[in-house]
Length: 81
Image (cartoon, rainbow, N blue to C red):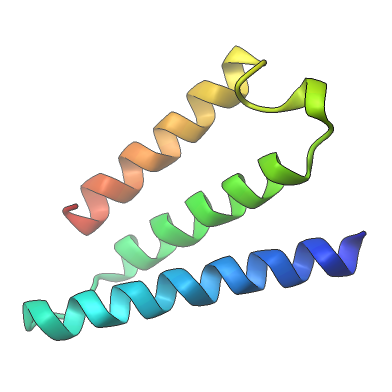
């Protein structure tokens, strides 16, 4: 279980890094460290939520849903999306 979760988080992190790299190439400026960190934290939170049992997902628990929304908002602000 731990290995699958680690692989999934690594895959999501890599995908986000590639997306940020492509966006940076088109925008002429590199993404900030804050943007990269916010995107990484959001990807990890999504991966953790997908690995939780069905009754404990963020869509069922308000505090988890609020946490995901806050991380997404942080990512949007840091990355300027």
